[in-house]
Image (tube, rainbow, N blue to C red; front, top):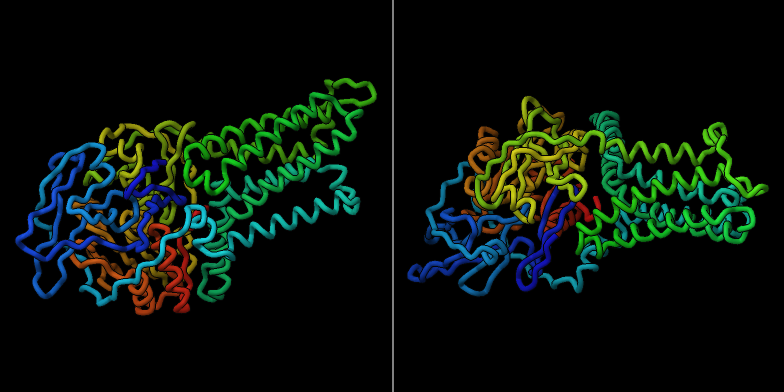
Length: 555
């Protein structure tokens, strides 16, 4: 992830939805151009040669004139506001090129400009940490799951330490391994794909209470809270196991103590790398540390199990005949399950041919063979052991599927500048929040910018739910190309609502979402936007009595 000073925002990602964290308070602010027709035009520096910049003509008294940069990131509405006449973006400054303005291309799908009041500016958060930990509330489902899981483990640990839970006192390492299995299950894409499928097929009936559906959605979206809590609990149980071992070192070997200490060190390092602030500011470091320390700890865990089972304290030696004893140990079966879950996605990794086109310098469309069910996300990588990037999948469910990647980081920019002929993929695609659309009867899908990609499949293939799509973006054709525009055409205007901010100006997206949800009769709203935008839409819908869900930082 890149972090730049000044007015340049930084980029992050949220489980298939990339976004930009902005220093300004208004998530939907768009810089407005002066109405003076005699004023000289702006010049902007971009790295995409002769690519034309769309501006808005003067419509007189009918509409306030607005200036809109082509979107350079995944699902935000605009670039940074700039008080100067020369507005610059990150790619502009890096490459130092400029291009000319051109007349706008009319957008066929749009609502009349809505009457909305400009939102009052909100004070910026005091720190990035407060945004991550407090921005979405102190008592979210994620945090409650974290606290409950941690409280259960700490209670059991206290009982064991005080002699009230003899089984745990005798086998603390088993409880540490059990927590590692639980956190692995919460992040296993293959397991979660099955869980999401069961949720849709068991609860996706009209007679199932809406309250039960929304509770299930909140739970499935927030399983990361259990994952994080079990990671900390695993460290606590292993520390307790190591303390007991050191007290009884006469009946163990130095090798067992050394291996257990190494596992503990790796788990602590992994937890530190996953700390929210570290993960937020240095995501690549977090990802690689989490992966390689996890693999190393798993290898040492096998060594620990084999050493502890084969060691005979009476002779102070190791036995070679451990097969029959090994299969009788619970630690062995739990570790075997962990190993299978970790290996499973990697045995499906393939290098596949891709076709990449760039409708603009701000986004690329990556096409793969094979149809994919609506609501599914996938991961791609230029180098499978270094980095993976998740994107929503667009597919009609037949011959091919595609991903829409905003040019926000080194990898996504390289897809535009130097498109590869092959990419690495995981053939086990995973289900995210949009997949649960099929669990409801009537639903409103709200997207900004490139966040549209994860929702398009619900228009291209049959869906059990009645879906209404609200898309707030800038320059559909110039940013996303004729193909995306064509996918959105031909649908009833009450089902597909496109608000082009380059033509219609900045809307109050929160109020617009509430009004559309009420008009559509939506049971629930799912939004894909930047963090502030998603939060505002979700809060506004909930305040109006409409269930709403958006990406959370660890969803």
